[in-house]
Length: 150
Image 1 (tube, rainbow, N blue to C red):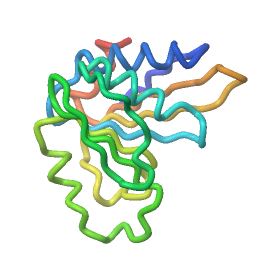
Image 2 (cartoon, rainbow, N blue to C red; image 1 turned 90 degrees about the vertical axis):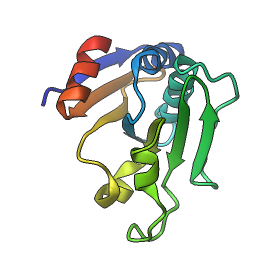
Image 3 (cartoon, one colour; image 1 turned 45 degrees about the vertical axis):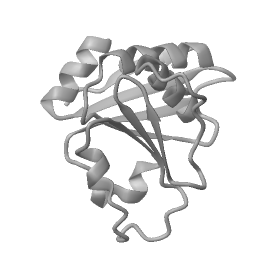
Image 4 (spheres, rainbow, N blue to C red; image 1 turned 180 degrees about the vertical axis):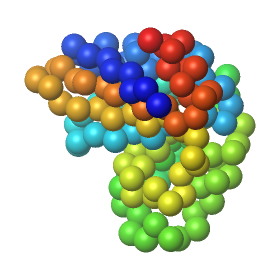
C-alpha cells in the first residue's frame, strides 16, 4: 500500500485536512492515530468531527477511554493510552463494525484488536507548528479514500 504524506504548517492546517477527511468518510471507517504527546492527534480529531457535522466540543477521552459524538453519523473517539492489559475484552469490535467512524489514539497498544482494514495516521513534529502527517491505508477502500483526499 502507498503512504500519503501531508506537510501541515499550522494547527489550523491539520484541522482542515481532517475536516476534509471527515466530510467523505463512511460508516464503519476505522482510523488509528499515532504521534507524540502534543503532536496534534486531538486537533486532528476535532477537524474530523467538524467534517462529520459534530458541533460539540471534542476533547481527548484520556480518562474515559471512549467518547461518543453525534453528527451525520456517530464518531467514536478512543484513547487507549491508559489500558493496562490489551487482552481485556472492552468490546472494540462493536465500535469498529458499527454505524459510525472510530478514531483510536495510541492504537499500537491494542494492535491485536484492530481490524485488518483501516487508515493508520501518524503525526510527527517537524518544527514549532509544522507537522508531517502520514496516511497509510490498509485495504482498497482506504486506499481510495486517501486518493480522494490527496
